Length: 230
Image (cartoon, rainbow, N blue to C red; front, side):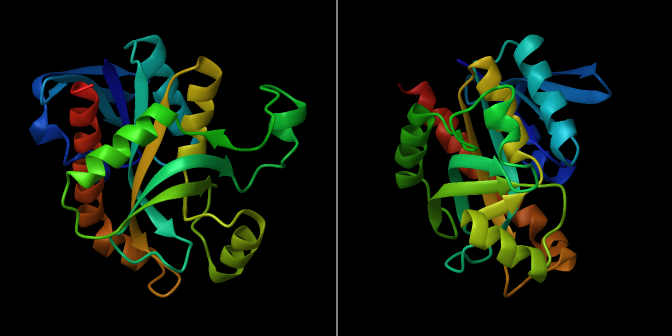
């Protein structure tokens, strides 16, 4: 099985690169795709750039050019649920956009039954088995993520929580899931929390990004190893 790994930023991708064997770099659409192996599993990893369109471009290229069988989104996120603390990890069960009118995806292409893109059930099961075998610094939660193209302020936080009650918010996950949905490609997202309502703001994100990215990497690699054993 060949996995695509999409990170938004270079700091989120960085922990994967030293682990990659037989790595070669292919450039496409002004992106660098790192193709190789992690613990014997074929992977193609990259950072797409922040926000929805960049992540969607990267995901479609992974599917069309690199023939990946599944895509894992790895990176960081803002914690929305009050249970979440800095460096807790969230693994998606479903994701949606918080800044797109809800009938856009149900009344028009791809004519979804709801606004939520569901994570692949097999990957969810593999993630649960992987987490049991992996010592992570924080807690791990499975649940809903939401995506939109803005850094969340206190005013926006309440509106999103009232409408969607997500665990986390970020700027890419739903767009990657959207691409996977229309291509019938299994998808899951792994996001480690960098900031919360209590510890909010860009400064907290920047301070915690490197460590959170490494935690997300550890979780993703554990999932890859679990998938290899199946």
